[in-house]
Image (cartoon, rainbow, N blue to C red; front, side):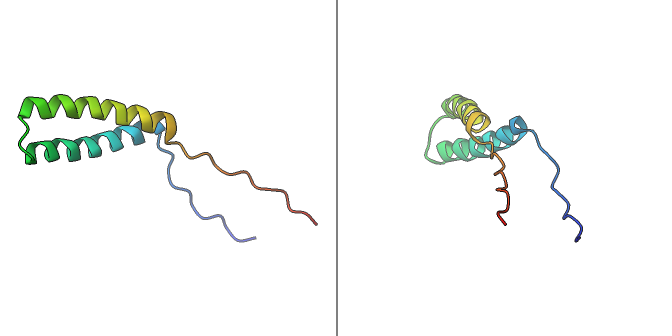
Length: 73
């Protein structure tokens, strides 16, 4: 029997959601600043977007493992 390949470490879905929110939030912030929005407006819009991105990824982003079908003989 061949050895099992190592699995990547398990990272909580909330941490993954936070990473997505920070990354996309930075993209939104710098995009707003680049088009000329004021700093305060950019921060507020970015924080609201980051919250909703975090919430969406937290609730909908988890991949459920597929069940193996029993082999038919």
